[in-house]
Image 1 (cartoon, rainbow, N blue to C red):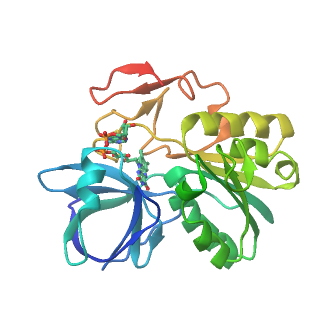
Image 2 (cartoon, rainbow, N blue to C red):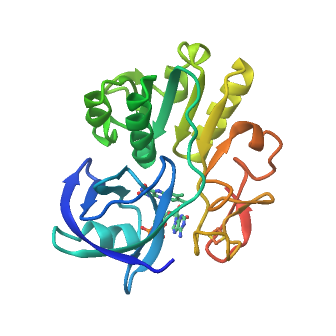
Length: 255
Ligand SMILES: Cc1cc2nc3c(=O)[nH]c(=O)nc-3n(C[C@H](O)[C@H](O)[C@H](O)COP(=O)(O)OP(=O)(O)OC[C@H]3O[C@@H](n4cnc5c(N)ncnc54)[C@H](O)[C@@H]3O)c2cc1C
Ligand code: FES
């Protein structure tokens, strides 16, 4: 559980607000697992593994911690603990991955494993506009067919990614999703209606990352340990999923 310190070897600007950091480290991990990344003097935050070897993290600049990480350059040090959490489980022959924002990161790792296993892997990616789509070319380089949706309609389907997958979803053996919780709720509802299994990666505010502090509670589950990946059947009767989260003080508040 002690942090490991690694050097940054490469930084790629993915979009205006998203960067990928490649570290001089490798982890034994499964797609969907995350690390607790620590910048001494700044804080420690959960970040998904985008690639395990070399260890790569794709991070959106949204606040103080991520802004500080975005200032780091090759040669700088980053500390991390993990991997933590329950990963995605591959099932079936034809799968659909649905990503919103930096949700592309854990799904890229999953796509690598799915392609290695010979699964037909479709990837649907949504964003507000074309210049905010994350890792599209990386998925294409793997050989995945991609479906693009943008709110503004400057690339692909105009509207939500959940609309763009309506035709293809019933043909899939399993759907995997990571992104904003309203998107996950919409996907769960579509999959329940179509009778298609799905796994979604859920976020809650995390402090310890391994089941100690209770901060990341979702109903009677701990997202850091029982998740972050949940089968949608585990969430069918959830009171919290799509409705309540916990803020930094641990208080249960509307999402
Ligand atoms: C399992 C998991 C995997 C994640 N993977 C990624 C990833 O691959 N790339 C990425 O860019 N982001 C990821 N995040 C989100 C990332 O942890 C937050 O965006 C980051 O902590 C924001 O910190 P900040 O100081 O920059 O922003 P803040 O202004 O502090 O917060 C911005 C947003 O991040 C949330 N957040 C802040 N602190 C935490 C915390 N300790 N735990 C969870 N959420 C927090 C806030 O609730 C708010 O919604 C992941 C979160 C979880 C739970
Ligand atoms: S973050 Fe501490 S129990 Fe989950």
